[in-house]
Amino acid sequence: MTPWRVVYMGTPDFAVPALNGLVAGPDPVVGVFTQPDRPTGRGMRMRASPVKEVAVAGDLPVFQPERLKNPEVLADLTALAPDLIVVAAYGQILPETVLALPPQGCINVHASLLPRWRGAAPIQRALLAGDQTSGVTIMRMEKGLDTGPILSMEAIPLPDGMTGGALHDALAELGARLLLQTIAALKAGSIQPRPQPDAGVTHAAKLTSADERIDFMASAEMARRQILALNPWPGAVARLDGQPVKLCGCRLGTGSGTPGTTLAIHGDGPEIACGAGSIVVTELQPAGKRRMSARDWLLGRGMRLDGVWE
Image (cartoon, helix red, strand yellow):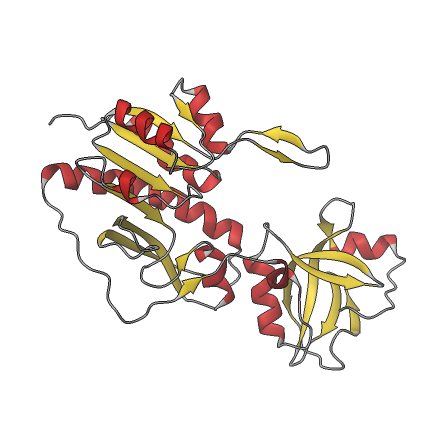
């Protein structure tokens, strides 16, 4: 079977397993497109994307355009002569000129069961909504946002207590495996795209600072979902005595009271009242400090905790 020339477009950690799978597969990766290096951390040092680091280590040609619409980018892509473009969390919308370029089209690795959770943050939105299942969809790309026909799909259950980080890693590995299976099926002519159903469409809006802030007026279950979904990134944030604290782990409590008040100090952390029920915070990260167990944090405070969480 004739190999296909593949161009890969991806940026964050989620896109790394799929790139590794392609590199180990039968089709040559002739170019890798990723976002430009960005300043990160307290020192604001320029840092390459995880995908670029893998590509450079594998001696693959790397392209980092600010915008795909630039004529020079289309010229670079045309020179690479890709048969197929594969996209996974790239961070830019592909213009129609790029979508029309490869003879085998452009396909996307998306971390949800489309049409549920089209958009930027499907992993966190699924957990915030209390979904019981998630998964990966490989779709053929078109002009709309995650609206293209489905090539393949695989679901996984979401066990109670799953974090955003754990789901991210599971779907990244699933996506890499499903991608290779899908490409093989496309080459064999044994797969037919099917339109996404009209029913069940939801949109996974990009996370904002408002999504990170815990509302103790809401139910304990909603606070728990938020802490789990945003762990480890971007983190669920509360304020105690005016200082931000990231809440990284919790369990449901049994008490009730005025939202934001500390009801009790348990061996694994403080119990905080919510609008309905309570949560026991088991892991956290105070501003400017490392992530730690709530017990260690409390020990540093003499196992006493005053003030209101907000």
